[in-house]
Amino acid sequence: MNRSKIRFLYLLVFLRLSCPFLIFPYPLVAIIINYLLDCWDGLIFNKLGYGLKTYRFADQLLDLYWLTFILIYLIFNRPEPIVFFSSLFFFLLRFVGVIIFIFRRKENHFLFFPNVFEHLFWVYIISKQFNFPQLIKFPLWGIFLLILTPLKVFNEYLIHQKKFSLLNTIMRKKILNWSD
Image (tube, rainbow, N blue to C red; front, side, top):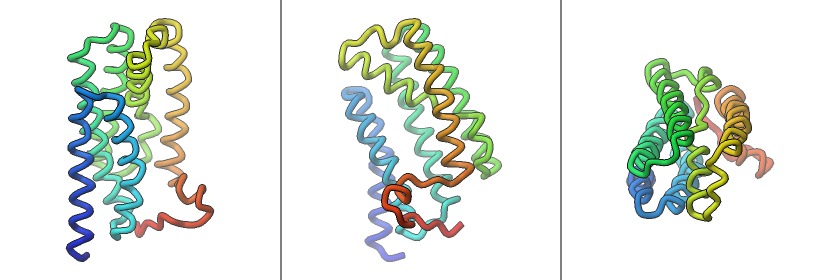
């Protein structure tokens, strides 16, 4: 791999590591930037010649890093107990899933450890940024839990079991072509 590709990869990792710090002054901006970086990092890893297993390992570590910043944000901002404790449950659930992945290097268990936590945080931040307090109160919060959980389980199934690529589907050709 040439130096410019290595520098580009370093820049990507630097951005993924730096972006979470924006969560404290600008949580919505941090969510958007992190989401965009997370959407495109697979393409970058792929085009730089890394295999899917290498990418998934790096991506899971970077995702867990981001999720930890979200948890710290919630601890310091003390949301309503229903928001905090359900979020904490889903953080711990995903954390266990990532730890299992780190040691086993297999993705098939993510179906049981979906990343609901991050999407609950999106709802929380949207409710705060746009002054929709009813979104984080019962019963709406419970409805979000009931909707997001099966959607994220299905999403984990597509990504980690079926190796579904939204980019390949949208472009109607194989953009991502993983070597392993």
